[in-house]
Image 1 (cartoon, rainbow, N blue to C red):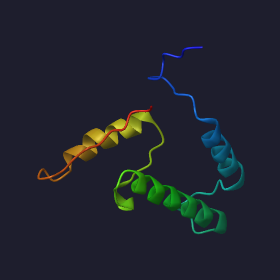
Image 2: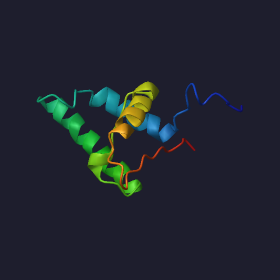
Image 3: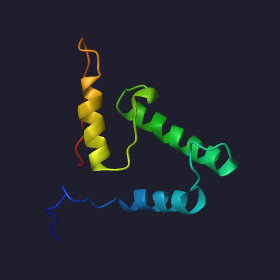
Length: 96
């Protein structure tokens, strides 16, 4: 099958889906909360942030995770307006 509607949704790699299922089933706490499962979720989130930063030679505090396309678009557009103009860059990575 050739899938041509990646603007609507994109298939998830099976290894990523397996990890996501494990986290969603076993570590579903709110990472902003003070209780144990929330702290565990925050730890996983921060680990992912560091890994992504390392892949693109960024600092972890420069990595933002969003819940979907609209939130990502707004962050890129409106957040990009807040960047200092000298030496600032906005990077968008397409799905392979």
